[in-house]
Length: 411
Image (cartoon, rainbow, N blue to C red; front, side, top):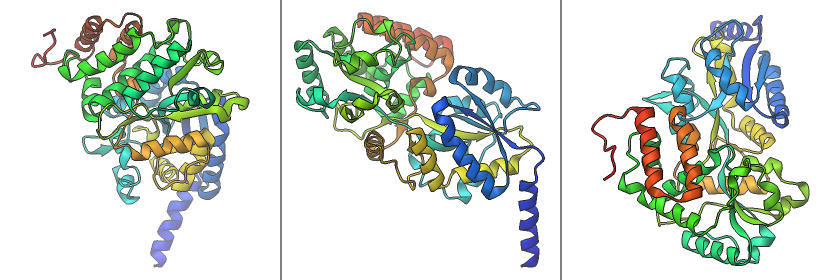
C-alpha cells in the first residue's frame, strides 16, 4: 500500500513540476476566449499543470496546423480541431496519437456514442469530442406564426414557402459569397432522403454523382430554386451579411448552424425560433452537428500531461461549463445542457437523431470541397441538374481518383 502511494506521489510530482507548460492550441473567436480560460484555470489548480494557450482565428489556424503536427520546439502538445475527415487526414499520416486506452479506461463509448464515428477510424480513437453545435432552420416567430407556424414535414414546408412568396416575402435567405453555405442544402436533403452511411460514402468519393439514389436530392432542391424560394442576390452576401434582411422580415427562413446565435441583436433574441430541417420520409433522422475535439500530437514530449488534460476535458461537468460559455452543446450525454432556449431545442433534436454528420466541408477532402461548393452555388442560379451532376462527378474523379469499377459517366 505504501509503495502504491509513493508511486502515485512520484507521478503527481512529475506532472506538476514540468519546466514548460502544456501547449494547447485553440481555434476560436475573441468572445470564446474567456470560456476556455476559466476551464484551464480550474485544470491548473487541480493538477498543477500550467497551460499555454496558442490562439488563432479560423484562417490562420488552418494554415499552421499541419506544420504544428510535424513537430518543433514550440508546437502545441494538444490541438483543438474538428471531427471526421479533417481529423482523419492527419491521423492517417501518423500525426495524431490514438487515445483508445483513455476511451476504455473512462468507459466513454456510451456517453459519446453519437459522436464516436467522427473521432474513430479502423478501430482507433484519435480525439476527444468536447462540444458540438446544431444546424437547422431559424425563423422569426412573429412572422412564421402568422403563416401557419413551423412545419415538420417537407410538403407542408413547401406549401408554406409558396404562401410566403405570395405575401411578398422571400421564403429562404442565404449568402453564398464564400460558397460553403450552399452545401448545407445538399447535406440536409441527402441525409433526409438517404442516410448517414450513404452520405459519408458520397463525401468520401465512393459513389458516382450519377447514382440514382441522389436523384431525389437534386430534384427536390431544384424544385425550390425554380419556384424562386431563394433570394436571387445570394452571391452578394456572406453568410452573416444576409442577417439584416432576415431581421427586417424580407426573408423568412435561414438554414444555418447555431453559431449564428452570437449575431442576434438582443432586442430580437426572444423572437428567433428554431426547427429541424423538414422530414421527407418516415425514416430515422440524421442531423448535421459539427463537433469540436481535442487531439494529442504524436510528436509531443509531454504525453502524460496531455493525457491528464484529455481526461479532465472528458468530465461531464467540465464539458457542461465549457459548452455553456461557447453557446454549444456538450459532447457527453452525461453533461447538463445550457438553459439557452435555442441550445435546448438543438440538444433535444440531436438526442432524437440516430447519428450526426459533420457538415460537407468537414466530411470530405479539400480538393473536392473547393470545387463542389462552387457547383452548388451555381446550382442556386440555374437549377441545372445535368450540369451539377457533371461538375460534381468531374471533381470527384479528379480529387479522389476512383477505381475504374465505379460508374463515372452519365447513364
